Length: 102
Image 1 (spheres, helix red, strand yellow):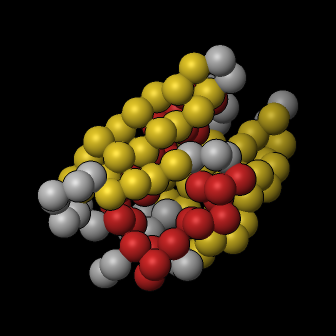
Image 2 (image 1 turned 90 degrees about the vertical axis):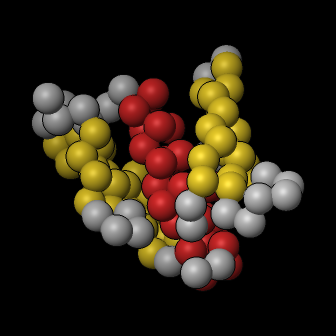
């Protein structure tokens, strides 16, 4: 599947604050990546290789990965949420991912 297909797929992110579940985002992959300023670009010369720039408070993580855009975007989002440090669930392209659940 191409990038546009995955960008328009729905997703959601919830995090827990003081034991209470809070909706962080519900919408499309494209909207989430834009709202968190995560930049995705295709690596030249390789049809299914992607470069992600993942901004954090005063630094930036980068991810170069290979596969369809949905799986690669899931990896980038998981890294972003992991680095934030909150207990989170992320309903992605293939699964519900649980981050910081012990």
